[in-house]
Amino acid sequence: MASSLFLSADELMVRYARYHRDQRNIATHMVGVPMIVFGLGVLLSRGQLPPGSSGGLSLAWLAWGLATLWYLGRGHMLLGLAVSLANGMLFALAHLASAGSVAQWLIWGLGFFGIGWVIQFIGHYYEGKKPAFADDLVGLLVGPMFVTAELLFSLGLARPLAREIERRAGPTVLRDLAHPVG
Image 1 (cartoon, rainbow, N blue to C red):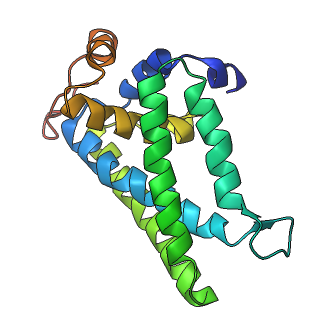
Image 2 (cartoon, rainbow, N blue to C red):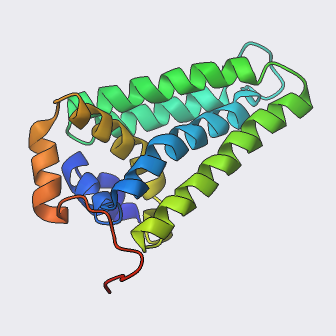
């Protein structure tokens, strides 16, 4: 795992894409990954640094800052900025959602986090492969980057990265569930 922390965005995207070629799996990730990020943001937003302070730095913003440094250090500035912005917007909304009672905070946080994972596992049923993080926990950071890259590709941006992914991981498919291969 530690060695994959230092790979380039291109290499991380290709490795992640190898687990995500079924179009239905990619579609579930477009919903499930943001839900997981939002849910995590909600759960982390009540923790403050220093502990017990009000108005200090939340654990959510600390996690976002560290992840942003990591994303920007992967060698693909557009993708790093885009995923950091997307995660930042989700974390800003998460702070708003966490402002209610403890019960509301837990319902928002655990609800989005849990439902997001259910959606992910449905996608991997279509893929016929286990989730990428099962082999490498860095996949938990790469998931939001992959979803953001897919959005960039749909806007006609980051085309060289899209071509490299398809060249090395293959095109997207609709896997035949009645006659699975391999």
